[in-house]
Image 1 (cartoon, rainbow, N blue to C red):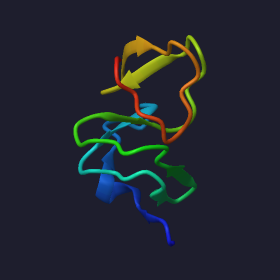
Image 2 (cartoon, rainbow, N blue to C red):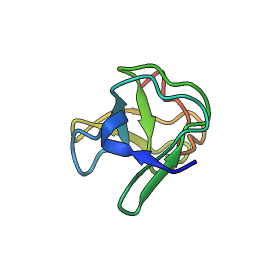
Image 3 (cartoon, helix red, strand yellow):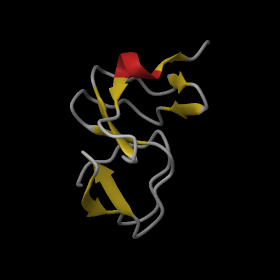
Length: 85
C-alpha cells in the first residue's frame, strides 16, 4: 500500500514539535509520509490525539505548540499513541 500524505491525517503545529495532532481516524498500519518524514500507525489513533514523530526517548520532553507539555514516561516509538502528555 502506498503511503498517505501526512498532512491529510495529522498537523504538526510548530517545526520544533515532536508530536502532531491527528485530524481524522488513523488506522493501524497506515503509513504517512511528508518528504523525509515517514511514520506508520502502530494502532488506531483517534482524531484530536497526539502522534509522535520522530521517536521520543524515555524522559525526553514532549513538545507541542513549540512548548514542553510533558516528559516521556518510557520510550515512545513513531506511530505510537501519546495519551497522557
